[in-house]
Amino acid sequence: MLAQESNKNSRRSFIGTTVKAAMVTALTGSQLNALASTNKVLPILAPAVSPVVVGTSFTQLPLPYAYTALEPFIDALTMEIHYSKHAAGYAKNVQDAAAAENVNTNSNLEDVLQKISGYSAKMRNNAGGHYNHELFWNCMKAAPGGAPTGTFATAINNSFGSLEAFKTQFADAAKNRFGSGWAWLVVGADKKLAIGSTANQDNPLMDVSTFKGFPLLGIDVWEHAYYLKYQNKRADYITAWFNLVNWDFVAARYEKAIQ
Image 1 (spheres, one colour):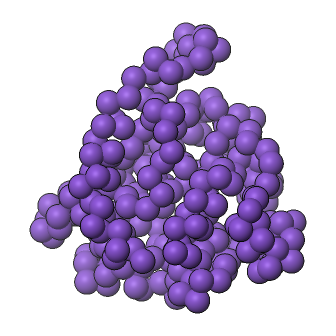
Image 2 (cartoon, one colour; image 1 turned 90 degrees about the vertical axis):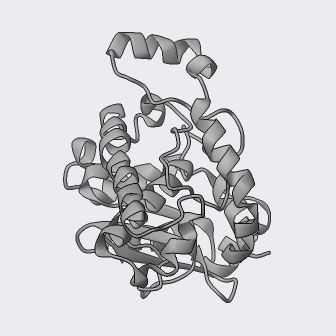
Image 3 (tube, rainbow, N blue to C red; image 1 turned 135 degrees about the vertical axis):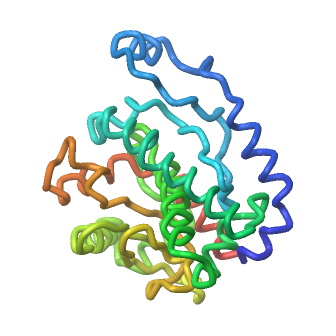
């Protein structure tokens, strides 16, 4: 499926380039006031268009919301550090690794991840870190509420029994990931949903991963994702995080995955 998407690289490259030129004119008055009162530098916001569902570039895209947008569930300072320091570092380093290993950065990052065993540890760590974070930002939006609908909701119920049962199993995968890593909801090769986790910045697209599939939803359980607000209470962070899940984005990825 991902290989078929490579024919659309030119269009995605255009989207990835033009989205960076988005201006902050779309900010509401309250967001501008927040910027003035906090003296924080807000990220450049992506325009109000649907994000690209598959096809990740090697460059860091703008956040689709302000650092303050996910409060009270994720605080603004955590978001600022997470996006502008941690994630930005992965984006820079994956480009450095690509240059050193003669990787065409006009291709999709997914193509590299699926053959990551043939690349360096630097590429593995940073390609994974960059991909994981680009997906993570879009898996969230400001206080969305609601729940999955349509064929994706049916798939959740068929696979896990109910949305609440899914949340419990997903939260367990996230809580029980030893050390740093991620928990995932994926579509497997059999087109069925599955929950699992990966260590460090690995993900289910990698050929070295023991848990494989097409990622629909991922939660970052590295301590930098939650420690300023939740300290060592990872379970509290996970519970709060469910208030932010962008089910429309996740459902769109599911529809693409089962085509």
